[in-house]
Length: 159
Image (tube, rainbow, N blue to C red; front, side):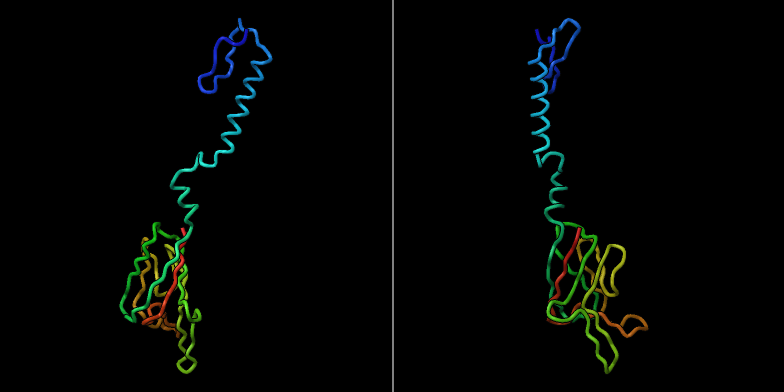
């Protein structure tokens, strides 16, 4: 006689004092546990939420905008599905910076952005990139050039 009771979830033998254990009962229990562990270990969807899966499958977002030449502040609607924590923005067909040696003015065309700090002239606001008014940065000989008329700029946004 095997066990007179079974566990609720895996139907393993649940012994009481009057039961007489049999080898096949133990083999049944071991096979049941082994199968359950194998199925659990091989199930790649278990314990992963749809939000986590989306984050893993979409760790970054790439987009482009065209400069309009305005010296006013401008917000670039990235249409990204998440709020990025880090971004890289750069002009696509030019070097990251250009220096005019006659005026000793350096124009930046490449920027790093985070939620808390960024290169001068650009910032993150939710899912969007905000361009500050163009101009020379303080008492330096540097200027930002993130909105040159007709210039194509790329951005990579990271979770």
